[in-house]
Image (cartoon, rainbow, N blue to C red; front, side, top):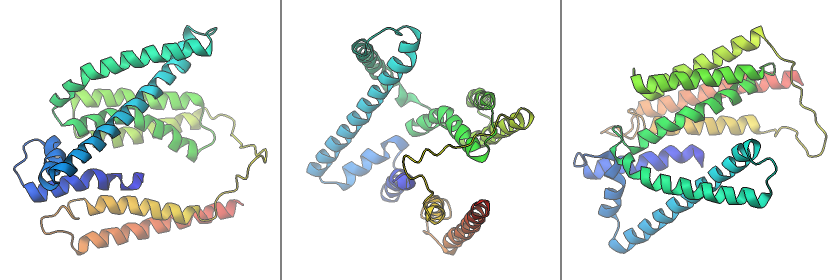
Length: 274
């Protein structure tokens, strides 16, 4: 489902632009305006109720996760080493109430975000999402990466991102890409100079951990589907005033060929190691 997230997010905007044209001054109002224009009043009410329920569900899950993280990972090691589970639950509930009130006070201020609510949250999410991706990606590529390399790489990215966020030399997606590459290179350099002992996975044969035989083909399909979705909603895809043309499908075909070649090379290398 994550692969089709761009479709869920972008398609209502494309539909709203086609139906409403340039009559919308604020991009944040496209979705509710589209719902009010297209759906009958009773169905629009049901839709609003479903959206409200989804928002509450997401809000509750975030509060519960935050309370658990605070109580178990912050409060217990620092101040509650001898506290019982009942006390930790109480602390978590108090933290949930405080965070809930804080969120309700701060939430109306987001409507003044200059680049829009969606772009604002995306730019904030990249501050802590990409460091996790950096550590995971580099961890997959090498087994000799010391822990200090991950800490330094994450710090390099986060400090650089905060500086670029306020200076705004370019769109946040561009400097996110540059900082991702720089952080990975820093980590590889540290691993080259100060490698740790190579990690070897110990199989205790409790469960079957043999790799799935179709993993490369399925990964090929998922990767191509993700790229094809972005091509479809790019300036050479469905968002063109004339709609998609031959270049849209040529780009998808080239992406499929390139991904297929890369996956085939990886599969062959994996087979040679056996």
